Amino acid sequence: MQVILLEDVINLGYKDEVVTVKNGYGRNYLIPTRKAVIASEPARKVLAENLRQRAHKLEKVKIEAQALAAKLDGVSLTIGAKTSSSGTIFGAITNIQIAGELTKKGFDVDRKLIYIKEPAKEIGNYKALVKLHKDVSVEIPFEVISE
Picture 1 (cartoon, rainbow, N blue to C red):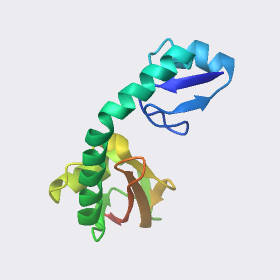
Picture 2: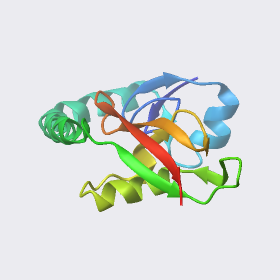
Picture 3: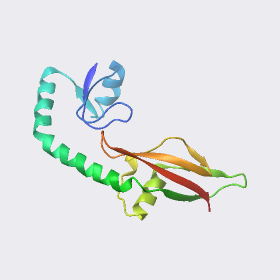
Picture 4: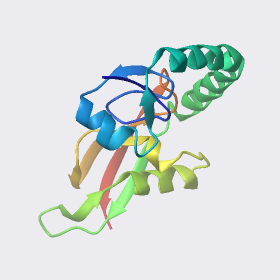
């Protein structure tokens, strides 16, 4: 089944993309939650017209995302966490904590745009990916230390 995404869906696609999904996923989740519509011929024509009209705005958003990515490029974070005597963190470092540290440094990044590649459950160095736009992403190294 082909659907047109109405918003970004992690590991599936971005807004206004036509993607192929299984029937159950489309009919039972994407369409009822208004994350997608069936990609019928009239819907495709409406999508093409909307994309044509929004091309200028989308280019401006992409340029802003590239500017923020350039600022974030040299940033590295240090996050303190409570640990056991063996260096294991009680819990894990999440995208919320990374977004908080970025806010302290003066960068306003939504936590939903931050993806941690491997779970940070011990003291050490890790990397987080910030997807600012579908074509623009930046990798931010962060170090977890004991408080």
